[in-house]
Image (cartoon, rainbow, N blue to C red; front, side):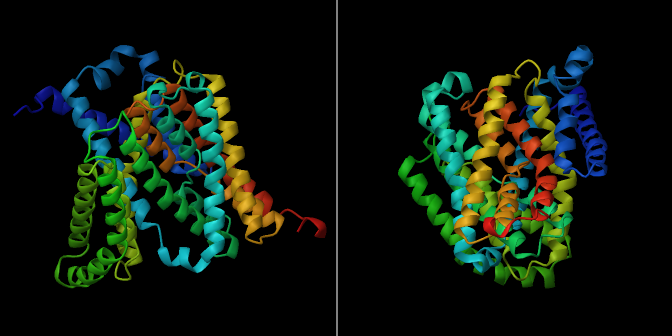
Length: 416
């Protein structure tokens, strides 16, 4: 059995320490500038990666991140676990009762906000695959992926923005949250299925068995699985050490679900996301327990993942202004107008529809995870991935001010 040697262990520990320290420094800077922590963490990765450190101090960068193959494999394992756990807590944030309470209006907004960017993104990528940087050998799947990538909303980021603007508990805020939850669930189901259809994807059980098992797993976990969790959680809270018992069992079922979906040919993140939804919707999972899970994952594993993004590509060498421009313009406009039209169809006034449009245009976490997986599978080029990261950063930075402006906008009665 091959193991890390003395120097490789030291190197791995230095990698993790430098990533966590840089992530903390820049997330605190971002917080003081009233920006999401993810913005600072991605910037920390760009500084630590080949873009800045690799250019200014190539020998030091190489000795820290590039010259130890076994260490890099171990670090990649940490990053994979971080992605699974991020999707797990994203699922915990999905409250099905909030979605049901908003009913048809949330569904209209969510589906319209997804339909326009998916269609526009697919058409652009399919028509200009070489320019945009999608895999020509997997043209349909890669083009569908691009449309899906620009249709995702960052639920955690938009929830924080709404809280900062005191809109979280308003009718408009609840519609945005419910819409974002629907987008997350639909988006990850679609992405998992199209990834299983990809020529670049791993071999699974075959397309139709994989789709059938995915649907069965989803329905079961949100019905019978949720009922089982509701029986187990009270026993766990009563008989096991708290919060240690809850943490260990929650992460165990997360990894079991992730391994199951990975086995059937759907990415592990989907299993983690669905089990998160089932667990988070349980009446026996207290807010304090959710907060412990969030703190544990968001302050340890999330920074490792978001910093690792900057280590994957050189943001200067792979930067293509044309590709970035297309991704940002198509991504921002189609998502905004899709959500805006959905809100208008749902009967909201013009300025409230604008708030919904800007709110659901917020990216920053899930779409980056999706983009990184597509990059690893060879569906997209580094230039297109950089465009998606920049789209996420811009939308995260702009969404708060734009939502605040739209909320306070005075409109004439004719435009209501």
